[in-house]
Amino acid sequence: HVQLVESGGGSVQPGGSLRLSCAASGFTFSRTGMYWLRQAPGNPLQWVSFINPIGTTYYQDPVKGRFTTSRDNAKNTLLLQMDSLKTEDTAVYYCATDRSGNVRGQGTQVTVS
Image (cartoon, rainbow, N blue to C red; front, side):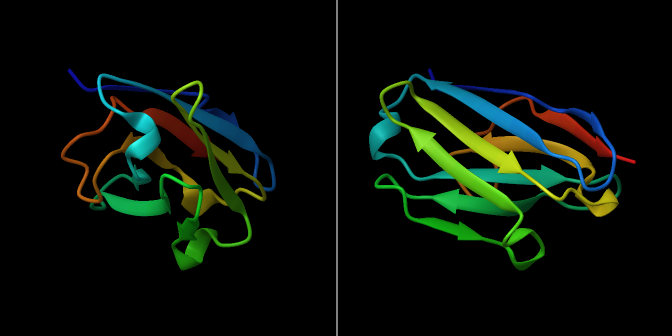
């Protein structure tokens, strides 16, 4: 079965950096486009970034130039490098195989304050 496990969240001051990881199993990761999603308190789930199987990336405007998503298909791992973090980046972050988050991990908390 599909399993997605995020790690790397934590608390950081504004301007700091964090690197999230997502370990994927149970499906052909190398052929699957992957999303990072986030959900802030009181807000709906929203997509943050997308990377297709060959590594082409797309970002929502609020994170462009600050977040970088990458993938290691040999290790079935999805990464999100987050730099210049802002308080508004505070959220639970999920990796997912679909934009709506129907198939996603348990999430990792990122707090910027």
